[in-house]
Amino acid sequence: MADFNSEELWNDFKISFEETVNEIDKSAFIDAWKDMPSRTLFYSTKLLPEISKKLGLSYQKEKVNRFDGVFYKTASQNTDVPVIYIESENDAKSSDREIFKLLAINAPLKVLLICNEWNENEKKEIAYGYWHYQITDFNDVIGLTQITH
Image (cartoon, rainbow, N blue to C red; front, top):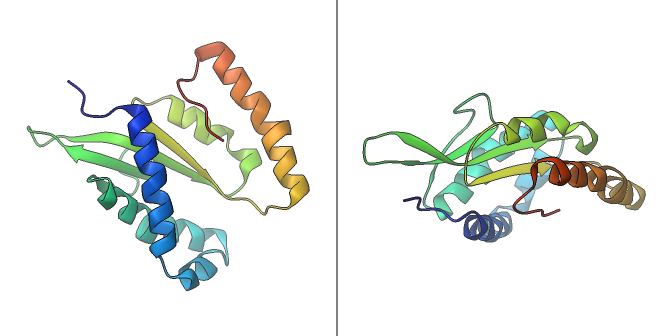
């Protein structure tokens, strides 16, 4: 029987994410946001490993199929079983490939982290002009169990 309920796992992930962000020295964020490679390195060396610890899971960068991160649990027969797959994208408008990649795998939770150069117009365009139709289309065709944006 599966140990993980997707909704509970998502709630625990959000709490752990927020706690970790609040615990990390703010200068690390300033350094990370200097450029895209620094931000990606920050995710893989500081943010994601700490979140996985809080969740009682192990973390590995690009463990399978070049996902940005995988949180997994080692099962009784020593198999590393993926529990959470994570993808990140520095441009919200080009995140389609990450969505398709996440939809192609099976795990209780899949997370897409998006970073963008935000201003008020950009926020509205992404939230209502881009993501709205993306989420609606996916939900109409394959059904989504939980939609959060």
